[in-house]
Length: 303
Image: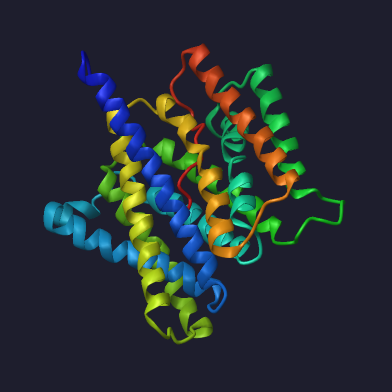
């Protein structure tokens, strides 16, 4: 990108990136709505089966059998396992927690990635960034408030989601450049569908009416298209340009929670979210100052 077209390319990337997180908000809202009547494994299956079906219809006619060819199948499967675990944990948490709460805790993922990059990737994290990581986790504690009598046990699923999402993002970085995006997308959907399908006989409830079917289909579409938009956005702009546009999702989630479920987050959730977001933005800023390549400071798409 060069010349006058570069600002337009970056604006396009920002819009696509932001739209992806709007779709992920729809996905989470649909999962929370379905949790009223259906077991979490059934909802997880619907999310991945819909994604897999759409990916097959989308990519097979264009790429044929080449879509299955991976330079590192083991890493693809491992990455997909982490994504599946993160999705399942997130959906379990959404059954009991507000959208704003799960979203705020998800913003701790960049902090976990930075911390885990030391033992897993051999990267160096300086004192200032360690300080941001510690402050960010204090923000998470403000949201959860353990020991204050306000912490719901389902918060543990949000913490698990953040951990699995961080591992997912680290394996994604290891896989970068080895496989085309359509291969990565279709493996993610395939592994999730294969893992969730054997659970269906034990948890399946008949789906009655058009709305549940529509919401299940919506999850698959939002998951598949949202992930694809992220990939396209990163083709049009450097990742550090896009990273700060993850954080407006707290607004989408809060608004959706209020309009759909009548949930209003308390002040501690908002204060904690502000602390976590500020820490994540500082990590992003330090990456720019140090002139290093992007280290995954945005919240990964774990839905």
